[in-house]
Length: 286
Ligand code: NAD
Image (cartoon, rainbow, N blue to C red; front, side, top):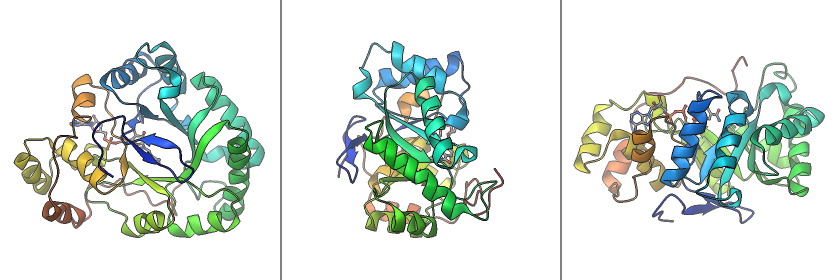
């Protein structure tokens, strides 16, 4: 589907609409900067905010949402993620309560399991994610979360979850940008109607001086950041660019007035690995 502005949406498998670009908030501290950045994003027109308990900024994001006089809470799509140390049925229920309290919200739009194979559950990760998912399903059925999903899951993690799940995951948020395409996971998710969200859509800044991207961006009179975000949308991913600078927050939203041609899409799709974090979800130590 062609997206024309920030409030255009993808539709999740349960029919919920999710605005096509999310505002990323990783490494934005829990202070005035978070409040100002999120408010700037909302003012510019972002309607989707991505945070996580581990980012430690849910309180400030809550303040920004509460005090925004541009848009009501219902018009925003807010995502958070369950941190690794909180996996398990009871822990998840408690962690969720803390998250919505910190965000000052009555409900979340999307809640994700942050990582599949985590410290403390290397041997029993299957049981740990299934127990966690049971709590997600309970919260979903109670109407406290409008959609549920996962993050950093490979197909073999999803297979375990999906075989046991009563409610199938609607989203998988993975590291995805030119130079890191994760084709197998993308294909698996697309086949199973799981929306792919792209974290690190700018390669966390690490691909912005890539000469292949610079050349294509110049053709369109756009920045490499804009090209990366546009590439993500044209692949039907949902990018989550992060910035704390008003000009860049605005620049990253100005991606609806150009189209990357098929040939250039292919060139970018086939770029060699570059700009990745190097994190392997089967082998993290946190
Ligand atoms: P990103 O790819 O969004 O890059 C952010 C970096 O690029 C920052 O240093 C910023 O200053 C710079 N930047 C932003 N816009 C720019 C522009 N127009 N020109 C030049 N530089 C620009 O990286 P990210 O923040 O790691 O990822 C995006 C979001 O994805 C996060 O904020 C977070 O919400 C989410 N995330 C999720 C996970 C996960 O495990 N699920 C992991 C990392 C990030």
